[in-house]
Length: 469
Image (cartoon, rainbow, N blue to C red; front, side):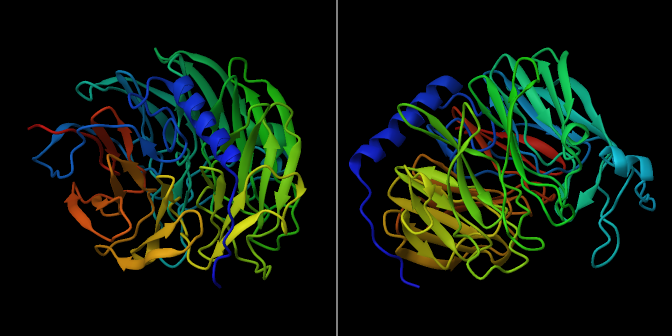
């Protein structure tokens, strides 16, 4: 399918530029903090300088701090502090326990060991304690560790520490795959805790829960998009960051069949002069909800036109310039024009591409769109305005790519599951600048970039990378 060409207006482009600037200011001085997954601009871009291009275990490593187990959670950074989630020390595998009748009625999460036995031997999820680590940015020293939840499971590449934490520089919030949301101050003192499954019912995703919270102004936005293992509706939730109280909860209906209601995406933010919208892809839909009231403003039923039953969605939306880039399960990837109301399925599609990512969220500089089809090690660059391929499915070093790319200093940083980071030129020509390998341990986390440093998390350690020359 050839992408259709549209010309979105300059006014809406200006709205998005102003909104991104406002959010960066709120999140801290440009380039110094990485307060949540995908950074201060929520799009994987960093205003950074003097970043390393090459590194190894013995070169350009400022510090390395060991971790007890693996996780898909990404590190976050605020000024002199780094936060990262991890299970505790790995426990010995044991048989999974069957859900109890009482737990099934109450909606309480199951807390015993559960290994993923699909296709062979169980993969140990890590220890049962779910931990939040606070590290010194200067030298990687562990300042404190807090157990924020108990009970771990694994579902292929997820365990119950998959969601990334968020911070505003005064407090830090952790969220687990059990639906336990915890607020701590920067000294590690608990302020409040919520059990989302206890309040609103059990999560019903086929592969466990992995969405990270979005922190916006005075509220945390949480998405529960599910349906494979439940008849309960999907919903979007806003929680007061200071008190933990629910501000609004809005159901998100869909007629997606079987596994297709399930989405592992993180909510995204789109600001206008008079309001802001929470953007979500999944359940065959892309939707926009009002930040203040939770009311659904618009929806587009564009992600699964054949209504296949296995179209779970993992990559999140990317909001750039005046377009919403909405991935699905590789095909289609849809670009929507912003500013719609009601059903915009037939009115706001800017272009459609048959080539999209399956797991990593794309990244853009406002002119180009870069993405990786992770299990196939294929990297592509599209023209953002039209969806036209500038280069298409170029081969990367062998490996599976689950981490989302980061764009900084005219370079795209992309880490595979073998802890090898490919550095590419952020240009319309395919050009690899460097390939850098660390400890070889399993790596699912996206990089964080702050100042002149890159923070990479493997299953064995957190690394702070910085130029030594």
